[in-house]
Amino acid sequence: MRSVLSRKVSPRLRCLISANTTSSTAIRGGIGSGSLNRRMFSAYTEDFDSDKKTALVLGSQGVLGKTLTKHLSRNLGMSVIGADVVVVGEDESSSLDAFIPIPTLDDKHPPGLGEMTEALASGLCQVMEDGRDIDVIICAAGSWQSDPEAPTTTSSDEDFIAGARSFGENIDAMMATNLYPVLAAGYAANRFMAEEGLFVVIGATAALSPTPGMLGYGLGKSGAHHFVQTLGEISGKSATTKSRRRKARKLRRNNEYLDTLSVVGILPTTIDTPSNRKAMPDHDFSQWTQPEDIAKEIGTWIHMPPMRPHSGGLVKVFPNKSGGASFNLVR
Image (tube, rainbow, N blue to C red; front, top):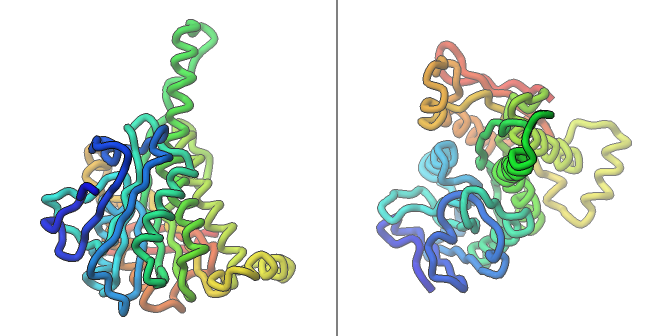
């Protein structure tokens, strides 16, 4: 086995990968597929505190993900498991107690949903082998791409065929980053979610309506919203009709965690990150949501379950002029 993360990262965290290759590119960069379906990625830690509540953060290496892991670990005293296509660097400090690498080949070839789900499930079986549960799952993974240029009636055959691949790769990438992690985490919840669990998905305000110019992004985020509303309605804390409640009770008979699960979507407009500032330098940054405000709100829901919105709810977030942010239930 070859160590991916050393103790220079964190005295609590170690992550190993064993594969039928010695190439480091297999776990670096974007999201991939292909021959990785036969490789096994495993993650574990030596000092996992069984007395603490546990959180799983997908997209833990992004700006929002790092903010969340720091808040959960340092301010709420939770054990935090990270999962991402980008591994923790050897010279990087970390608030994680364990890390699960998601396989990737390169930026243009994302993994299928099956490969991503299997990688997460395999990693969790290693980390959670002592029988402990996950109290909180947060899907903070995501990315944005605009639509590639569409063909016209005057496009050449060569340009038309090349454009077809670009179109497909754009949709694949947006689904792999904005929807597949949510679905993979939803599958994992069936095995590991604790009672009174909290499942949070970072959606997007833009995906509440049509998204011209960014079809793939809209498909991915609206799919994530649909997951939140669907799983939320199955849970025992939904706000729905009596007939739907009766149907939901039948669906969750073999999954007791669903009786007390809260599933909530948080929908920012734009999160204030270095990459967003670089991409949109002329925008008013004061109108963007700070990652810390999202982390604090989720922390409140963890610490005070009665403050959580109804299960299946979509919550829009926007900054206040006086500082902080407001979270308003929209669906």
